[in-house]
Structures are given as structure tokens and as C-alpha cells.
Length: 358
Length: 116
Image (cartoon, rainbow over all chains, first blue to last red; front, side, top):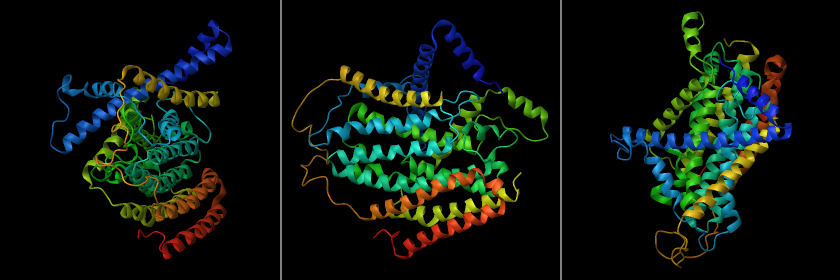
């Protein structure tokens, strides 16, 4: 597998030969920042286009097909249109909190996005408490949603924010437990090490039944955490207009939309990292020829392939199930997913302690 | 290097939002009228304040969440070393989870999980 740290080290050396160390690190930081923004925007555009097309396919429609070949410039046009709309602050809102909310949401989204191991040596943030940091950073987002709803001076917003808060914090538990189960199996929290130990088999295959159960639980909880699919109560269009971002206009709304789609990708990418081997190619023990061919496909293609596969699963879920009620959502979490994931955690601990995994 | 990157990412997020808002402010039209600034509630005039009472149920779930989230913080260090701890660690965590489940069972029994 190609190690991108060779490239980054080479760039670092080259910059050091041009300028003093402080400036070199500063230049690298700026480059990383620009790279993250570009990748973020590109992924958002791809995801929104994909969502429209997938949704259209599930509903036997064509989807966007007028602007550009197969409608692929449609989303870019929408972004430009949104940029030219006025951002205004309605009467009676709590101005400070109202303007702070998009920052909080994008901050959470960027922090988790930077943790994703796109390819070997391309991690931006790689802490030894990686997974833990990831969960902590992702929960900043709910603060932004609550701020947006509370400060908007609108009844729809506040109901949407309260529902969203209750739903996201509840489902964070089982998402956290599912990841915890995999930490028990892998024995490390550092994301690059979790990926590194899946060389001979992805954790979902090596982890026996509990790993598979954890994957299912994670998919359900992840879908709920993005406020999508059967769990899109916080912004249920037919009852709450747009939920917590009703009062935001132009790009103010655009940020929420952007973060929502990127959070979908982040949830899918975490699933791809922790369960499906990150950038590791598919290896079948014993088939050396097959493994060698798989090694030729670059890591980031594997990574994006797996992530988009999980994104497709989540979209499938979204467009297949009807919306739940708030009491159904909460009882699904507290009466089913939490007990199941706790039992699952114990089973995984048993499997690991007695060495029953592959 | 990791913490430099952390600061970089935080600044990137803030800069991204600030620059896009600035850009949008520069190229978008500006106008003012009384009706536009009103809270949107399906077109009819709003009645009463928006910062109103809401269901206590949300609060109960938040409290329950707090209990479980703190428990997750305790479970992470254990999860990393499960392999080395052996049967002793397993029994320990079984006891820990048993106390926790007792809390959930109590809340369930008391009807805190029911949406009235």
C-alpha cells in the first residue's frame, strides 16, 4: 500500500529548504486548511447530487437532468444561487446565539472530518485517543442545533431543536457503544492503528457475531444522529416547516444543509473505518493472487468506495421507511438499542477475553 | 504536530464560515421591510412569546443520557485493555454494568421512558 507520509515528508523537507521552520509549518497548516475546505465542499456537492439521484431512483423518477450532462451541474448552480440570497436576521432573535450556531455546527463537522483516515499517511488528526476524540467532537454539533432553535424566536424552531436534542443525545449512546465494542476488539483507540490491524481481515469479519450486530446498531444510530431517514422528526417538513433552521436564510441555511450532508458522509466514513477496514484492500486469506491485485488499487479509492457504499445503505434506509413518532424514536433507542448494545458489548468482551475471534 | 493541526482545523472551520458569510454579504441584495423580519409561522401573525414551556420529558431523557455518557467515559479505558485484564476484568465490568442496568431498569419501571 502506498504510504502518503513519504509525500508529506518530502514536501516538509522541501519547504524547510526554502524557509525557516516556523514559516514552513505555517505554510503546511494553510495548505491543510485549504485542502480540507476543498475536499469538504467537493464531497458536499457529490453527496447532494447522489442523494437526489438515489432518491429519484427509489421513487421511479429521473431526478435532476437539465443542467449539464445528467444534471451534474445542478448542485453547483444551487450553491451559487444560495450565495446570492440575502442573509438577514429576523426581529426578536437572540443575535449572538443566532449567529454563533452555524459556527458550532461547522466546527463539529470539520473536527470529525479531519479525523478520517483517507489513505495511509493522509490523516490530519491522529490522536492516541482518536475514536474518543471523534465522539466528543461530534457531540458539539447538538449544541449548535440547540442554539439555532432556541435563539430563533420561532415556535417551530424550538420544537425542532428540542426533538433534535433529545434524539441526537439518545442515539449518541448506542453509536458510542457500537464503537466501544469495536475498541474492545481492536484494543486501541488510535484510528490509524485500528485501520492498520485490519490487514488480514476487516473487523466486521474477524469480530464474530457481535461485530456484525454492532455494525447494524451503528447504522441505525448513525442515521438518527444525522437527523435523516425514518428519524427526520426535527425538521419534519410537513409539521415543522424546516425545524431548527426555519429562520435562517441564504447561506445561513446553507451551512446547516452542508453540515447535514457532510455528517452523513462522516457517519458512513467512520463505519467504513471501524468496521470495514478503512483504506485497507479486501484480502481473502489463502488467495495470494487476488490479494496482490487488490493491493494495486490505491487506498483512498478503497476508502471512498466503502464510505459511499455505506452512504448508499443509509440513503436506502431513508427512502424506504416512513417517519417515526417521537415516542417511538425514544423507545426504540432506550428500550431496544441501549440494552442490546450493552449485551453486545459484554458478548464482545467475552469473545475477546477467551480469544474466540478469528 | 497533532495539536498544531487541531488548532488549524478549528481555525479552518471558523474561517470557512466567516469567509462564506462575508462573500454572500458582498454579492447579495439588501432590503428591509417590516413583514420580512417577522418570525415565519405560516404567514399568520405570531401569537405569544416563542420561548415557551416545553415538555419535561426531554429533560428526563437528558438526565438519563448524562448517566450513560459518563459511564461510556469510564468504559473506554477498560475497552483498550480488555485483552490483558482476563477474566478478572470481565467480572469487574460485569458488576459495573449491572449497577448501571439497575439504574435503567429503575427509570423504566418508574415510567421515565414513557412519552406521556
